[in-house]
Length: 130
Image 1 (cartoon, rainbow, N blue to C red):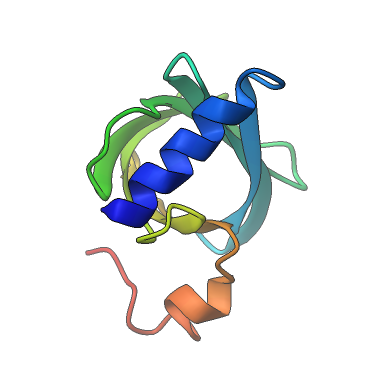
Image 2: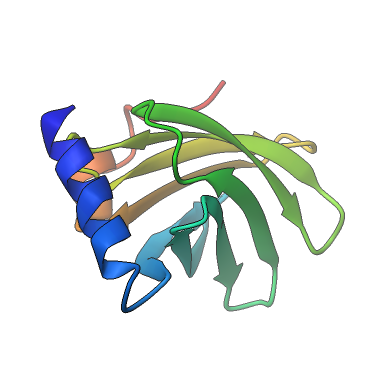
């Protein structure tokens, strides 16, 4: 919690120079690789997006000031599918994971910040959504 507050204070302090902080997002939608970014804003209204090489884009919003280590973030894809992501941030808030399911049953797994997909999910065998 203490490190999280330090990170929040650092972001807020940097707000004098920049009002947002972005991190890369990588993962899969179903079995298709996707990449994007998450952007936390000093006003709290923050967003994320991911896109596949085939053009499917999914995005959502969250409150960057929510200090819970795990939050629920709604997601909407350009093809009309919707869902929710369970987002878990690392203790120092420098990265985290997001797992979720879309309205048609397609699952997604993502990492952001300084966490790699392999660190979070390994080969993926243990991180299935049922």
